[in-house]
Image 1: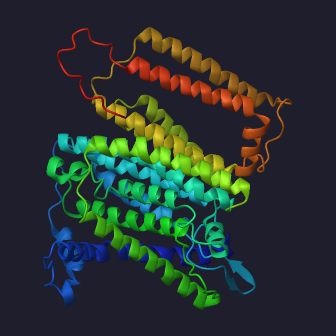
Image 2: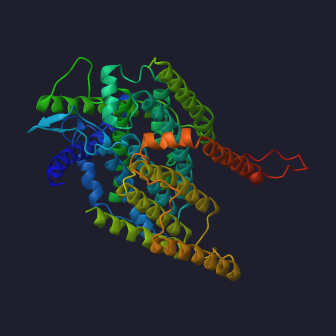
Image 3: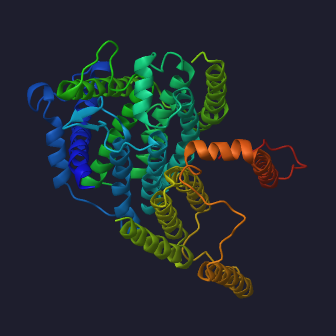
Length: 338
Length: 178
């Protein structure tokens, strides 16, 4: 146990350091990105190119008044933002970020928790994120919040199904739930996005719904529900929801990259030791950053779905497609093609 | 270490289970149920069955209890609106529960080994082992359970549908999907 503790803490520190930077950076990227798409300037006053805007916003959030509505269910109201952060920060432990690391004659896999059921553990923990939204909406005691919470619970469950089945199709040819094996499989063959294009598309669409991003941000839909489930939150508690959104986007991007886009590996690059670990981490972060840009790009390009369209898409299009993809992959794997 | 984790989560499971039964607010009961199920998942992991533990979180905590919460909020069940379903029914349930619990305790204390069942090994509850058991040795019962669930789903759909209206002058209200 003691010998395992130090490397585990080190690996955890690397991943947490990365996740904590996501929200302030993405705040800037989102605002400047939206300005770019809408032909505006965006925040450009604080620091070079407005880069310190995130810092200024964080200070502002900390010093604003934190209002708790009188009619709110207080314990649940205070608990919800904390629950929002937990899944995003927990799921990252199953994402591998480099080749096996040889040190003092021992091999350390570069993943915080090298568990056999990695993919499933990710899905299980991620499925808990719905509670923060639902509790926030319920505890606020506000009809807009409650509507947002209702939508959130239905939406997240619906798209979780399609996503889980799409992910299962990746596991079938690999023959293991361990994400390190998934990356290894892609190094030996091609990136899964190519042979499993259909599953990849289902995963990407479901990822937008799971993170409540446009075009599927129905739980907060500001034009109809004010701000949905977090209408009543202010100051730092609101900022925590904000942070949770970007953190879970990053964690989900990391999962998608690992499952479909080769994870930390690049074709033709085979490095080991410290250099291998550094390059692996850089490649993973680079791929995640590109995915995050894609999230921003889509958000400011597509209009919001209507609620019934969202449900129809989830149950009548994505779920059958995901099941079809799973059967297809299973047959191809049995036939020895994949 | 394992003993410590077991004790913490066993206590947590029991305490939250008491809250599930005892709390007046259905939302708090549901959240306590989440804690119970999560603690039990941890116990599965401690017992050497991580796959079952993860499935417990994925299916029960992640999906089924969310549906409970969904229904509670949809019906907007408040703290006061929940009435006990009658003293007599409660008494019967309490007696039945006590009998079952007493039987289980007696079975555990008496040390009777169920010879009919093979000893559970970590291999049997791993992903591959469980798949082999379910899809080869117990394929027929597995399929029958699946069919049973399908029948239950169809039955629920039929039961939840409004009876067809004789008066068709007003347009059909939009059916909301789950």
